[in-house]
Length: 449
Image 1 (tube, rainbow, N blue to C red):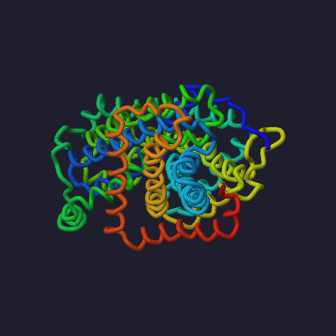
Image 2 (image 1 turned 30 degrees about the vertical axis):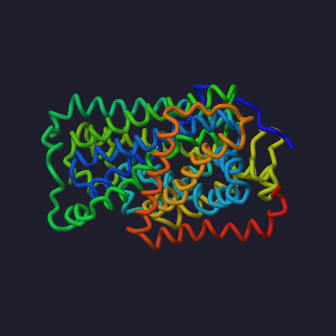
Image 3 (image 1 turned 180 degrees about the vertical axis):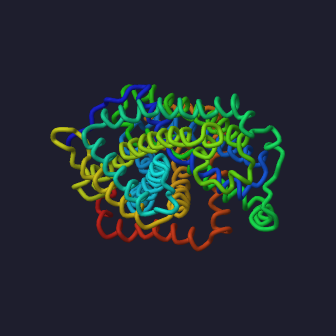
């Protein structure tokens, strides 16, 4: 079977981490978080808390990347740590839940800001926004079929653009906001909508934090997705861990500063009513010209994230099929472009189907609840592999064993909170994951060694 060539260097890999992660979340989720955590200090603390959880995960995945720098990322970690049935469940979940919902959530923001850039209200024209979103998924698929280097190049230049865009948004907000209604008093004022949304959110306590973390972890997700393409990273034992950690640190700092800028320009109740908060901040500073400019940058950001996600995730299906745990067609490598083109096309078609049928909130919630338990299982594999596979060498996880243990505990609390606060949706998600067991037993059990 053809192997995927190693074409991604350190900075291409860092670009993938940043490019996949900074997509739609930071531009779309603050409204819901503001409603759930109706005080600026609580909102900012939640972003920091989510960042610390993510950093613990990044440090752990850096060690896993050093031990198992293989195509498929989490799939390889789960396969070696917990066995092929668990690894199959992850790939199954990627197919039926995780990746399609992720592509849908990212592309919806692309479509909404795309319409806003032309002065069209996406709320009033939802089908136009979703049609634009589906087209973006198709374009991302074509780019990545052309080659990992093409997809990584798109992510690379657009990553630079989105980083500059967020830096300009922060800089302009802090430097010019004072002349356009911005105020330090915004950091002290609570949500002012009365006994409705704010009171209900406040009464939830830890539950509201857990619900807010759904959106926050959606925004931070992607920090380890470059490991899916670990088999295509040059000098992976050195470059893969560094890319994950450097990229995650940069993202945490930028996200916190961006939320500070939002809160400085707009009071928290205005943020809570603003699904397209970046556009409203730039409206306050520069009028419609600012809206058009930031909408263009958000489109670039979202498309970059789509490209990175499309590059990374189909490698899971490729790696599974290569192991005999998925349909062989998904392991085919294009004879000219040397990419897993069938797996990429399948991911794109599922993403297009969901983007036309589900809301942004439903897509992102399903994605986060489905994938983060597998993150925890992957990190927990460090403890098993350390004793069972000494041939893999040292993991080098900073802060071991406390850092991976903190990450696992945080995810366990998050999942429990999801079961308590949204039992029907969470149980449905887990039921779809477990439905992979009979599929495994009927079609692929014979491949377990």
